[in-house]
Length: 205
Ligand code: TYD
Image (cartoon, rainbow, N blue to C red):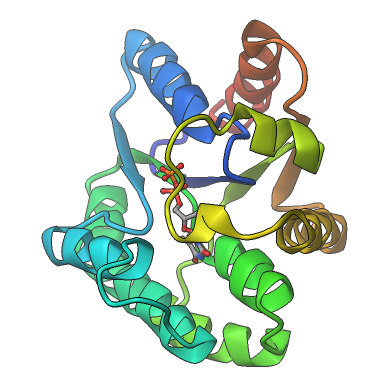
């Protein structure tokens, strides 16, 4: 039986990743599996400070290289302090966003060359790529429509930014169909949950 597995969830803001992680974690725990859930940015104590720096507006705007490096710094800390230790303990790690968020948002969204994003992030993750990445795919208008109330600094970007981000995600998934599972997140919550569980049940045999 497979124990440790590193699973990431990606998608636009509003795609329903957090709710899905909550539900999938509950279902796996009911099966007696040891599950650890976490997220980026902010999966460590110091990371929560980094999250405030990145997403808050306290210091006004930020240049895109700084933003990319802060996400990568948060990720490096997250891998070394939290994700790798949990995997070494044999847990299934469900992580809300990881390296693909930086490809999609800082790369295609902000327009930084993908090779540069890859370089700083491969340094950050120290070879720890996810075993499975679920891409919760949703039309941009629908994702943005689901974001009610106050938006953080990233979520205030315009529709074109998110359109580039969504397209980048689809391209990443198409380029690496071994790792990615494309999920139509416009369907009902039980349907999305079932598709994810079907994949996991197969992988966890
Ligand atoms: P997230 O925590 O998913 O948003 P929330 O919980 O507020 O809905 O992500 C915060 C924002 O950070 C989101 O807009 C995507 C962005 N982000 C990047 O741009 N690059 C990254 O590498 C990561 C991890 C997140």
